[in-house]
Length: 259
Image (cartoon, rainbow, N blue to C red; front, side, top):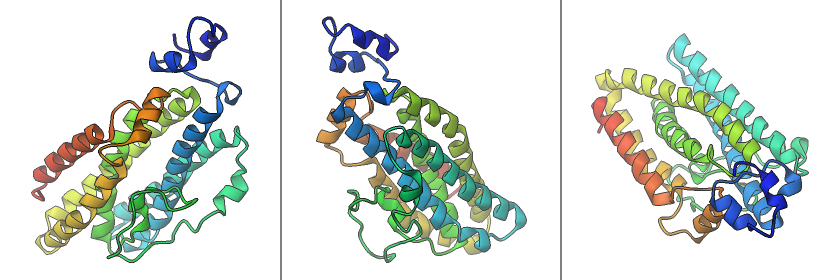
């Protein structure tokens, strides 16, 4: 079964069974309350993270050492806002006010560099915890973009399989651009790694950002993951995702001489 038309026959299959077998929901009209709550939470986390990521990366445009780097930083800043709007459009189908949502938080706000941000969401601000930390230089921004960009690709590849079909379609459109953001980060990091005067700064930034990006995958043991899995909103557990990202990041950093 591939769409919610099969839900008409409730005598033969429950919603949980339908979703667990790869079924899809295609409209807010067919979304039950518990599913709706978890779906909106997932979408809010993505939107808030994209808006906060864009706002935080905007300063990097003026740190860029050359025109090519400035264009790359500008592209990332713009496209992340566009990605947020695409998912926010889906949230508006559930009654979310887009204009009010954009004003809900100061997306550029950051906590002190040496603070510890609880990986759990901060009140109504649903951004991933890594986006509460500030960037401090071009090298720092490039490292963060490369590591978090790689994490975003791993996470989106999983989220493309979501049981809410409209969201999966949007994520499949977004994924190639997020992959390109990651590639731009790695290209910038490769240039930095070739410069002896910047290489040590890059290693310091890697040491700072690596554990903070790792936290974005969530706790190793998660009751919430089980709920999302039963609803077809998640498939791979947090630890499997984190290990895959870590191995990918380690291999890429080793290739740049930054392991």
